[in-house]
Every structure is written in C-alpha cells, then in structure tokens.
Image (cartoon, rainbow, N blue to C red; front, side, top):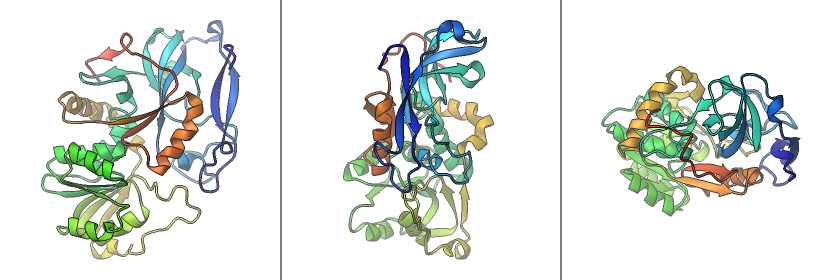
Length: 352
C-alpha cells in the first residue's frame, strides 16, 4: 500500500449462506485526506482495533432488519477504537483515543458528534471500550437485567456462554445471586466458564450433551439467555419452568443457514407461559452511561473478568476473524488489531 492511500474492506457480493473468503469482501484503496481539507468540527482518525460481532452477518443479507442492509461496495460497518491524528474540533486533540462506528477501514474522517472519548477505569485497558464496557457488555447488562429480570435464587442458563456477551451475562447473573449453567462448544471453554464462577458448564458438542443437559436442568430454567438459537433453543424450551423468561439476544447457529430451523416445540411457550423477548441494545441508549458506570465498577473491583481473542494483520485480517467467529474458535471478545498501540497518554483514566 502506498503511503498516500489507505485501505478499507467493502462488501463485494452477498453470501447465500457461508461467507466466502476472497469473494464476499474486497479491498478498496482510498486517498488519504489531507489535514487542510478537514472541515470545522471534523477529526481524522487512525483505526487501532475493529470489533468483530455475530450480528455482522445479518447486515450482509438484503432483508429487513433493525438497520438497513449494507449495499454492494459499502465499507463493512462496525465499532472501532481509533486515535485522533488531526483535529479541527474543539472537543478532541491529536493523540486522543476514541470509539466510533467507522467500520473496516484504516483511516476515517469523522464528525465530532460521532466520536466518543475512550475512558478507562482502574484495572481497565484500551480494548475494554469494545468489550465489557462497549456494546458487548451493555448487551449483556440490559439483556439479563432489563429483559431477563434476573434475581437471587434464579436458575439461569446461557448459550454461547464463552463468547463476548455470554461470558459477561454469566458473571452478572452470579453477581445478582443466581445459579448459572453455561453452554459452550469445547472442553477448554467449559473449564474457563467454571473459572468465571459458573455453577456448571456443558460442551454442546459432546455426544451425550442432551442427556447431560436434562440432568443439569432438573430444577428447570428460570431465565434462558440465548445467543445461539436452533437445537439449543429447542432443548431449553423443553426444560423451561412455568413463567420463565427467555432473553433472545442472538441466533448464531442460524445466521449462515439457507434454511433456518425453528424449535419444533414452540408450543412450550403456551403451556409453560414463557415470556420470550428479543431486544437490540440501542433501545437502551439513554441508559448507557449509568450501565457503563456499574460495569466499570465491577471491573475495577475485580468482580468482572474478560478474555480477548485478538487477530493481527490489519484490516485485511477482518474477514478471517469473522469466519473464525462463526466457527467458534474464539474465546471472549474477538478483535482485529489494525495498528499496534501501546496506549498511555491520551486515555481518560479513572472514570467512565
């Protein structure tokens, strides 16, 4: 790449099922914006980290969703951590760290109102802004508290429990006094969930998983936090307590399917009077500051732990990272490192 240009990753072709390496996305070259061409209130940023999230797959389909689908040739959207290079804003200075939604690109010009200062609490780190203190942590927070209405004594089951959101859900549920069973896809992840404090954890790839699940849920489920859908959701419905709460956060098992499958026992919602509710984290945008404050406090006190899987290689590695996400090879938050950064100055410390 020439130093007078930067790269972005754009949607080249809509996938019919699985994302196809070298076909779904393409690299696009752009001319670097010169400082003198910035308008008042604009900021030029370098991207440091990209957030890689399950819901990105939905954006590639030309179907109705909570936001419009991406268009062919459009830069893949997503949250990033960036560093201010040049600023024509009174609110930001060169060297400041920020978060924004500029997507899979090495550089971007952003309006000041579309940037958020990156604030790190005690015991925090730069990448927490995309993980436990970003939309990942907020999704877990509002899902289990506002939708799941978790309380002491509840039996909570979490699918995709070793993922970025699921692992935070498990820990919040424990902080609220619940008994937690985490479902995940490997024995190593089972052990990690136990380290996080889960009362139990199961590998759904184990041939005996259905029997193990039935035994582990003999007390029946009060709250089910679902990141997976499909057969796991069907099993959970079969073990639901009367008046249980099902938090519908994601359906990663179905995102790449040409023929998504629904649970065959959907009538359990009727006979067990289950309240099943979906949500989008941005529904709670006005409550983000208060939620971040509580998440930051738990993090500072050591009551909230996180794990990250960081894939290096710049924006060109983003496609590889997204494929890895759907293969379940990551543990915790999945990020792409676009530009190595040893953050020190520029961070707003001690507050969120």
